[in-house]
Image (cartoon, rainbow, N blue to C red; front, side, top):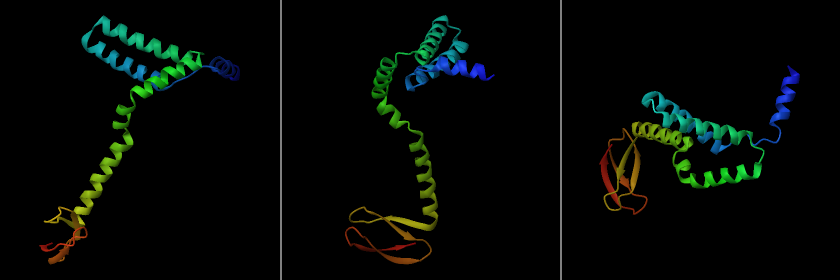
Length: 143
């Protein structure tokens, strides 16, 4: 078993391996395979196989500099899309929504009539006089 591992390690030495462009083509091949099952189209199947072969060829390639340049070109072209679809931003969005729901239970949020600044006051205080921190305007609200 160790002999097999050694041979595999020797084979993969100097290869580029998986990168973002290779991962993209692998996922594209998977999506096209699913589309092939639905449409039964030979053209879509050939496109899927081409993407898969290209992805595997990139992984086994020893021309590291050229694969690196291709991957950098891909990353530069998809930069805006990748940052808009960042999973951490989606998770942060859900945590912000959760936080605002929790805050609405404990605090009442008003807008200042003069400058439209949002003001947060604790609930359950009855009728209170609220002073805007931005413009200094005072108004009375029931909480």
